[in-house]
Length: 517
View 1 (cartoon, one colour):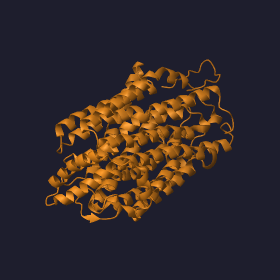
View 2: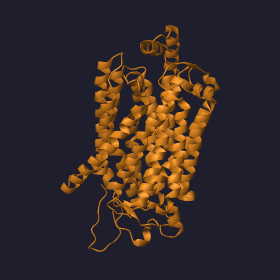
View 3: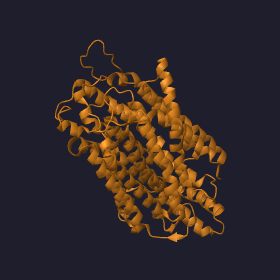
View 4: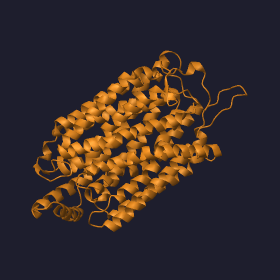
C-alpha cells in the first residue's frame, strides 16, 4: 500500500513501544480479551442453559449434574410469542430422539425412574432444534448490529465512545441474565445492542495505531487475535465451573464482571490509543465524510462485500462448535467426574494461541521465498481445512454409535478446525483495515461482521438437522459445506485480488509500493 503523508495519519499521544508495537495495542489486547471472556463465557452456557434448564419443567439446576429442579418455561417473558414463531418438531423425529436420549439419561443417572427419564428426554428433544435456531439467531445478531454500530461511530460518536457505550450495555445484559431467569430475552437484547457498538470499533482502533503501509499491521492483528482467544480460553473454566458448582446464573455473573474489567482497562489506557477517524476528520486530517467515494474505492468496497458473502458458509460450519459440537461434547463424550462439558469451548482458543505464532513464522518464511499466498487464497485454504476437519467427526460418530466416546474426537476435530480459522479470520480483519476507504472503515468492519451474522443464523438452521439425521451423515454434510466454500473463494481469488488493489497516488520514482496480500 502507498505511504501516507504525515498529515494523513496521527498516532497515539504516547509513542511508547512494547515488543516492537505501540503500547496501545496491548491496551486493546486486554480490553478485547475481557470482552471475549464475557461473550464466550456466556455463549458456552447458552444452548445447554436453554435445553437443560430454562425451557423445560424438570430442570438441571447445576450445569451437567442431576435434573433435580422444577420450573415453568412460560414464566420467561416473551417465550410464548417467540415459541409460536418457531417450527414444531416432527413427531416421528421427536420419538426417535426421545428414545435415544432416555437411554443415555438412565445409563448416566443411577436410580432415575424411567418415567422421569422419558419426560426429560421428550422435553429436551422438543426444545433442542429450536434452541439451535435461537442460538444461531443470537450469535448472528451480535454480528449484525456492528454494521449499525460502525455507522454510528463513523458519523456521530467516534470509535472510543462507542466502545464505552457498548461495554456498559453488554455488562448490563449479563447482569440481567444473572438476576432474573424470566428476563432472558431482555438480557440477550442488551448483549446484541452492546456488541454492535463495541465489536467493529475495538478492531478498527488496532488499525488506527499504524500508518498506512506499516508492515507491523498483520502482526498486530495476530497479537490482537491471540488476546481474543486467551479470553475465550479462560472464560469456560470460570463461567462453566461456576455454573456447574453454584448454578447457571453465577456463570453469567462472572461474564458480566469480566466485561466491567475490560471497560476499566480501556479507560485507564486511553492515552495510548490513536485518535479515531471521527476526531481526525474534525481536525481536517482526513477527507470529510460527505466526499464521494472514487471508482477505485467503490471497487474495493464491492470486493470486500463479495468476500463477506463468500465467508457465510465458513461461519455457518465453524459456529457448530458452540451449537451441535457442544451438544456432542455434553451428551456423547465421556468426561472425567471433575470436569464440565462446557470446558470443551476452551479447546478452540487454546489451539489458536498455541498455533498462531507458528503460522506467523510459516507465512514469514513463505514471504521470503515469494510463495506466501494472497489474503484471499489464505481464506480459501482456511475453508478447505475447516471442511476436512469434520472427517474426524464422521469417523467418531460411526465408532461411538449410541454410547459415549473419547474426548479425542471433538478435540482433534477442533484442532484441525482451528488451523482453518487462523487462515481466515485474523487475515480478514487485517484485510478490511488495509483495503476499506478510511472514512468508512468502521462501517466496512461492520460489513465484515455481517458475514458472521448470516453464517451464525445459517448455523442455527443447519443445527436443526442434528436431531433428524444420523450423526455421521450430519458431520459429512458439514465437511461438504466447508470444502464447497473453499472452492467458491478460490474461484474468485484473482478477480477479488485485482479489485482490492489500493489507489496509487503519484509518488517519486524512488518510492517502492507494496501490494495487498
